[in-house]
Amino acid sequence: MRKHFLNKIRLPNYLFENHTDDILKQEDIVNIPISPNLEDNLKRIKETFIGCNDLTILHWGYGEGLEQTAFSVYFDTLVQEKSVNYMKESLQDLVTHEVGPATTITLDDVILFFSNNGISAQSARIVDHFDQAILHILDGDLVIFFNKWNNVLSYKTLGIMHRQITEPITEPVVQGPHLSTIEDLDSNIGIIRNLLKSPRLKLDYLTAGEESRRKIAFGYLDGAVNPETLTEFKRRISDIDKEEILETSYLEEWIGESTYSPFPQVRYTERPDTAIAALLDGKIIVMVNGTPTILICPGLFFEFFTSSEDYYNRTIFSSLIRLLRIGALSIALLLPSMYIALTTFHSELIPTVLLLTILETREGIPFPAFVEGLIMEFFFELLREAGIRLPRPVGSAVSIVGALVIGQAAIQAKIASPVMVIVVALTGVASFALPQYSMAIAIRVLRFPLMVLAATLGGLGIMIGFLAALLHLTSLRSLGQPYLAPVAPLEIKQLRDIFIVFPRKVLLQSPRNRHLHKKTRGRKKMR
Image (cartoon, rainbow, N blue to C red):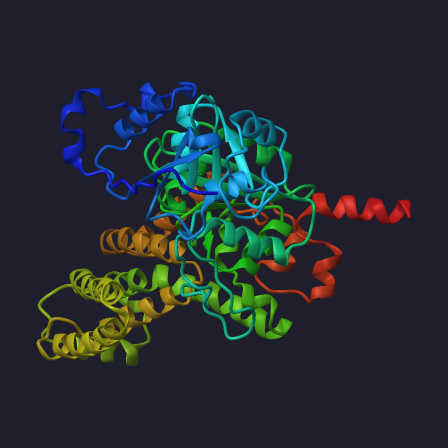
């Protein structure tokens, strides 16, 4: 086959200076059929993509005397294999020879072949509306328009470079898979499909955003997920199509029960094994193209203190680590406020020797314990954010050196006492021990109101703040499920994987997901 003429057209702005009033808007191309006139389609393409200098248009000729015309259009920055001639691949199977001019091909042959799904070297899809053709071009496809045919052929050619699959950055483990998701949605789904080979793994897709057209996928395990939870999830994301979704965290406000609650109602992970465990547990996972983060919902309070590594170690060690995290939660939330309350209102509760030591270290400090604690907490949070935002090789050094220098300088300058520096440091270290960053942020937020209550009402203020937070947690729900389940409401059998981790044999006898367990047990009885 020989090309009649081949013109690689870039579309600079000056070519369309006289057509700025005729630019097609997005709402103007909806439901417009493909025109059989090739020139009309070419004009619409140019008007739609005016100013898109990476758009490429190739003109072709075929048939007797090369009188039949066509053109292909694609984004040069999105096409994977630019050396593949898709026009030639489209017509190659219609001729009996491998090389030479395609003079025996007619438009009727093309229509008959592709309308009946003829076997071709490249798999093409037929598109019959102009707005669909535009979306295929924006998705990285190569689209071919034929003269006198009101359909177009679309070939999938997207070839964006993606980050290689590496070790999870936010969830490192000592023992277990060192596999992380990446920014490509298809790759992430492929990883999960490869590790969870079950036909009951269901996936559904939707597109959000009028401009970004971001592809979203949510999955669940049929028979494991609670049908009421799945129905509620679909209801909440039903009107998300017009929202510009750039990351999975954008979906949290639609899925979460209370937007203004400091406690997260969904979990995030970059680990495929964690996502698969959540699917087996009856959860729903959500993935967005362009981000490696997987959203898991519903997210219950005690699930934020579990890690995938808990199930890769021995039961005794995992249980001790789980209890250590509960202790870290208490320290990160209550230690500064308890120190303020004890030193300000309840000094009689402190042993005499320790009280004398505290008074000696506070000698010369011009601020009360509350102001002293606020200053040191502010410095610590500032150092923490600086360490996160700086480049990784520099960030850790700045955090460590900054904490040492500022802490020592504050003690020597009589701005803070050594005991307060220890309290703030222990509080920060305890917050780092929490596996989920979103829950650690919630604890950091609640720490300051508790410090204010401790400075004004002492131990009574801490109790009031703690009870208020507990009442809020008991009233909070995530996709219809109680946030504190299985503690409130109490389910004794489910506690075997909350505060301590029972052996795997015990956990398998009564999995947390009752729906899957009932179906499996019923099948065994039938056999």
